[in-house]
Image (cartoon, rainbow, N blue to C red; front, side, top):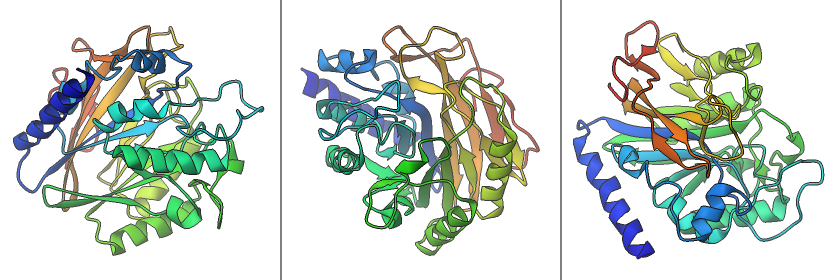
Length: 328
């Protein structure tokens, strides 16, 4: 029955693509997805449940779905003794994750919870389940290489970066790890993505202060530098809350999408997140719309139609709250 359910969900996810305009690719971005076996979403998955059940239909209206995978998924190593929490997702749970998210961002502060060998196994496990990874790799070159997708005639590059400790887990020559957010290196990565044929380059940073609703001066400076270097949009995460947003030189910045699948929080701002739908054409981002989700006690999200997030269309000087929840 579980296999049948996942196959039905895949049909729903693919049929939603027929709604998109030819020459425009719709990409859904969500924030932190944490399926660790010791936490609520992972325990639900272990019992045969689906933490993503209530949002699959909402996410079906996209050609590509992107999530931050906030966990290890290997079997090696030991928990990081310097951390209060070390997250590990059972590899059996990756099938459900990959049935929704074709792209898994790994540039986050929990990717290295069990060390470099475990991280290399995590890369292989996610790819084996069907998710292309970005923001991390088996060495420095791979970690900084964009993940490329072609959808509806538009070539989209995704680059992920960590700008939050532990910095020791940055990838290095011959050493698996995540891509660290260095401004000059990121500019080179963006240029290489363009040279590889990308029409659109999106940077997905893991950054900022936890539980802060406003982006820091550092986030703002880095975001603008990334756009000046040639990125078309910056869509961030990590603070466990949604943050503010802006338009810089005609390009959108959303500083944090907040949590998407995560338990252990009670405050309303921690259990509320955004799914961001971006429409891309060969000129860049043509529009953005957000749909609000709310997580239950198990950390599973469901659409929250009574609330609205930001919307934007190309040419508008600023983003504004969507007129109707889920509207474009």
